[in-house]
Length: 246
Image (spheres, rainbow, N blue to C red):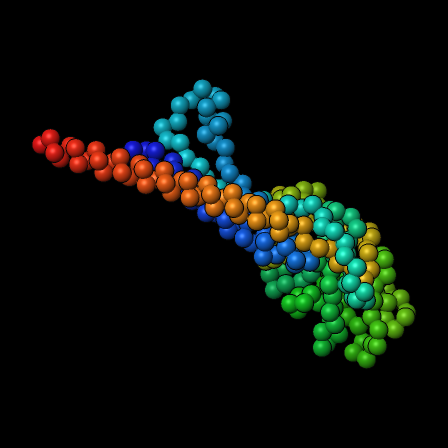
């Protein structure tokens, strides 16, 4: 069997992954705080060729999806508990069952026990690593521009914990709008909060850009399946010719 079919097959698998990435970006184009992904292809073959080596098999391989950490646009909402980070490289800290996670999604809600949480119930943390809470009988709750809680018009000591990382590009996605910090990202460093109140940061994924990527990957996938079919036909014909000569 020709090795060319394996090259085409690996390319088709890579484009299939690209299709998944593009579809996920499109699906979250309106999700506040979402960061888009981009399929990352390994380049070992190109490096080998540059070194003068002759690879025995040419193939493509998708290693992972790299997160685009560019900030999205700030969109006014008029909702008191909506806040957006002005700086591009800082994150809110939330508490999950698996430990601390980091997010750009600042839409807070008051839970039944007074905890301030994300829409899915994940609570926001303060600098003391405790969950932010307000009295159950509070009539109004909002944030100041430096992240402090204002309850019934009185600014209290509680405030949102905002952090940065030495290597934010090393953060790993954990769900739609949360990230975990592996050792490569460094330890979270507390940063001064600079917030846009009554606003949310929009997704940085473009629906138009996502559709363009989707169409491109679809066409390349279709082309590669035709190449696979062509190689298959060549192998089939070769096998038939060999049998006919016996």
